[in-house]
Image (cartoon, rainbow, N blue to C red; front, side, top):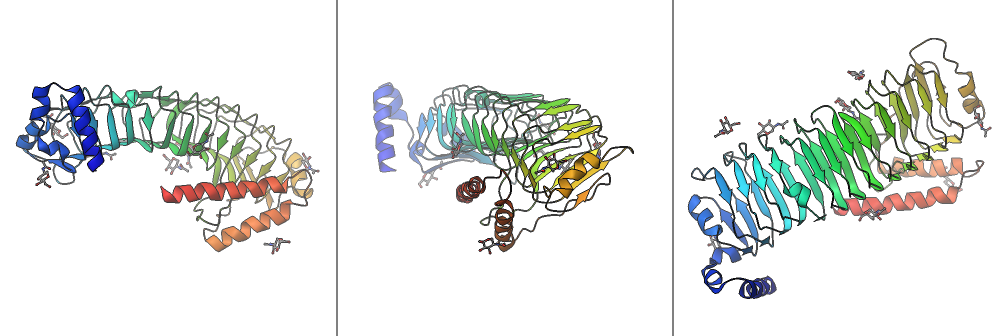
Length: 421
Ligand SMILES: *[C@@H]1O[C@H](CO)[C@@H](O)[C@H](O)[C@H]1NC(C)=O
Ligand SMILES: *[C@@H]1O[C@H](CO)[C@@H](O)[C@H](O)[C@H]1NC(C)=O
Ligand SMILES: *[C@@H]1O[C@H](CO)[C@@H](O)[C@H](O)[C@H]1NC(C)=O
Ligand SMILES: *[C@@H]1O[C@H](CO)[C@@H](O)[C@H](O)[C@H]1NC(C)=O
Ligand SMILES: *[C@@H]1O[C@H](CO)[C@@H](O)[C@H](O)[C@H]1NC(C)=O
Ligand SMILES: *[C@@H]1O[C@H](CO)[C@@H](O)[C@H](O)[C@H]1NC(C)=O
Ligand SMILES: *[C@@H]1O[C@H](CO)[C@@H](O)[C@H](O)[C@H]1NC(C)=O
Ligand SMILES: *[C@@H]1O[C@H](CO)[C@@H](O)[C@H](O)[C@H]1NC(C)=O
């Protein structure tokens, strides 16, 4: 802290006119600058740098517009999370703010329409929520680095776009009832997740640089651009959407290995469901799905083809009106294989071969759908399942057991990181 203050003082002396630096109020050096009245606000508006956090609480006498005209950096967080009274301010502005070392978290400003922070490029994480009137937040596009979260919940933003961020841990976009476009065009890696839920139906999603993500979950989207995506470590879910086609040309792997250090509470691996406009999908490079592969209730989807898929560690569940179902390379299915076809006359005989030649470890059901068994979530059971699977697969043809062992080790490493977060 002392070094921070010395640093700030040095910056203050070197870059401001003497008259200004002399008048910098001492509250700018507070470890927490608590703004809870118009009077404190007016003093705080003189700060250029804030050595700690800025916390804005409810006050009955705030003006409609709050501006921090001089503020350039905040060494802590910029927080306003109000539980008792909603803040009625309509515009929050910090035109010179470039850096917030920790979090920008603004919540329950029910009348806020605009956050104007056009040069804010560096923060640890952003959380916006309970801002139902918000239609403009220019810093979401200006951000160049973020260490952790990019979370935008319950706003009226029509577009969320950024072409500079390379990395984020959590990307969560929920309950934005006006959202039409979501584009993070530089993002290469999201180490925890990218999730869209309960936004306006039909969001167009573009993630052209994304190579790796842990959990990938999309609801209510109308298009998805993921040309570079190679690896989804956790699950890949497209649900309740109006996409007409899904293309993942480079996706090779989906799914978390059974991991003894975490409890797996569901079977999700690759899941595509409740998307009545979906006519086709293409996963030409997909080789492995850990946990379950499920494709259900997509009424326009008639052809299922996974040309390179070799193994599914969990179950395969397919339900719909299919004309063709093709898995030319499938070698191992760790759970059951269940295919329910709504129309009579589907020929299950071709697939029956997988059952008789030992490709499927569990039961085989076609043309009637059999509900998939759910996975045990206890740690001991998970460990037994890993050993079970390894023991079952190692003698198999063409299956590299050493590869699956390193996959387990990798998954455990990642979950260790997640537990720390
Ligand atoms: C600044 O810190 C002092 C000393 O801890 C405290 O008395 C004062 O209330 C703080 N002011 C604000 C605005 O947070
Ligand atoms: C602020 O928001 C509340 C709740 O949404 C609304 O009732 C009120 O009219 C708004 N006030 C202004 C000044 O916009
Ligand atoms: C959005 O925020 C407003 C204001 O806090 C709240 O009344 C509303 O219930 C929230 N909507 C959702 C879906 O959480
Ligand atoms: C993605 O980020 C995580 C966490 O920083 C890192 O471990 C992983 O190697 C990155 N993956 C890629 C492909 O850059
Ligand atoms: C799919 O979407 C429906 C409806 O929006 C929701 O109830 C369900 O929980 C979602 N399922 C998954 C696995 O995301
Ligand atoms: C099937 O998907 C449609 C959307 O295409 C949805 O309206 C319906 O509720 C889904 N059915 C079930 C049983 O989830
Ligand atoms: C098992 O049967 C399926 C379906 O007939 C076939 O595609 C696959 O090549 C067979 N695998 C082996 C190892 O014989
Ligand atoms: C798997 O094989 C190893 C080594 O042969 C053995 O120690 C272990 O008990 C087996 N596990 C299961 C679940 O069968």
